[in-house]
Image 1 (cartoon, rainbow, N blue to C red):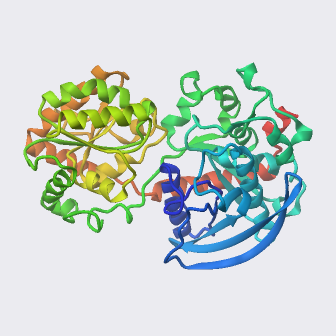
Image 2 (tube, one colour):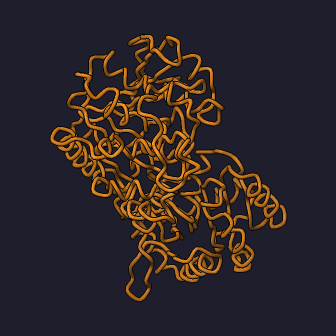
Image 3 (cartoon, rainbow, N blue to C red):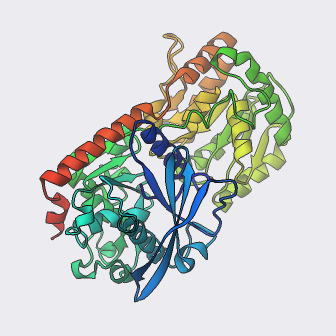
Amino acid sequence: MVSAEFDPFAKTGGLADVLASLPKALARRGLDVRVAIPRYGSVDLTGVSRRPGIARFDLPFNGRREPVRLDAVEVNGFEVLLIDNEHYVSARPGIYGYPDDGHRFTFFARAALETARVLDWHPDIIHCHDWHTGLIPNWLRTTDRHAPEFADTASVFTIHNLEYQGHFDSSVLETSGLAPDGLIPHPTRDDLSNVFVFMARGILFADKINTVSPRYAGEVLTPDFGHDLDPLLRDREADLHGILNGIDIEAYDPATDPHLASHYALETLERRAPNKAALQQAVGLPVRPDIPLLGMVTRLAEHKGMDVLLASLPHILDRGAQLVVLGLGEPRYEEALCELALAHPDQVAAAIRFDNPLASRIYGGSDIFLMPSRHEPCGLGQLIAMRYGSVPVVRATGGLADTVEDVDPSADTGVGFVFRRYDAIGFFGAVARALELYRIPDTWTRIIRRGMARDSSWDTSAAAYERLYAEALATRRTQPSPALAAAS
């Protein structure tokens, strides 16, 4: 597997969580899994078992020979390969946001591919995650198609979020070694036909493609969710699959989570109550067991539903609820939440930061967990919240629709509250339904128990990935790439 992120070494969102837990589940199934990531300057290996300097080699790149150092660490039963180069990797403490990101991730992807040669290890599958790795399937079908090391290697390309595509100028053509093939005309926008799009190349050339939920696999085929790449995805629809993300149920376990004031499980749900009081106290809200406490752990961005939340919040607060929000993001939303916290100190707490311990306390102490996303490829927050006994309110999109069954009190079914129309009225209606049932303890407890009993582990999804790998190998070994034919 090749990825720009990996928890705990480099993380901005769910991609890092998946890379920490999916390989673990696959390794348990007997697969030999290795993960390649950049060793950014901020990577901290303190206390990690490692084998430093397992390989060194020079990589011809951008007219120079760039030295590459390869370290290995053991994490969760599999090996993580850390790719280091002073100029493109370790001199940068951040993951993204540099003017030469196109060249940086071209270098990383090329170096990751070369490690297989250097280590004399020939993988059956190279599993590429998101746009940062989109050139690897391209190389395997073009410049490296006759390389004996990859004669029997297939590629799988996972789209975690199609919105982020890796758009760069045509200079990346030269550094990537793909100049002889030229740029690929954009399917819908002439203005992007002179742009080098990493995500598009992963889609075009991978043997198999998948998204991180079945619902999202259907959504990306449409103009509303396809972000101008839906024509490419419709051309590859036969090779496109949706596999739902899971969570690491050992890492996310209220019975052992060290950040919780009181440990509990499905069988000892009565022990959960002290966590609500501890959370209220930690964020400066009145400690009131009777008041419904709503929580959010999110990026503060429009597509996460912040506009809908802010429009609905006065009505939610009128119902007597408390709200705690943890996250970073767009300054306008950070400022709005801080102003609301000042205006309503007994009801709103805003933690504008990245804080894993507080995130655990929100999952374990809130009564209701809010995810009013405009779009959500999969979402992990709702899965963690249910495991911790916080009832989710979500919009019916992507993985949220796949994982949260709407509560039906008459049938005594459902694990959360779902709204469909993306607006403040729809969202508030779902929250209001939740607040009404919160006042009925027996009904509310049954909803919590159904959510906690839901299997959100990686077991089923890991088996689905194993089947996808087998299909990719069969495709790679029996037929030429349709994408290659189309592009040539």
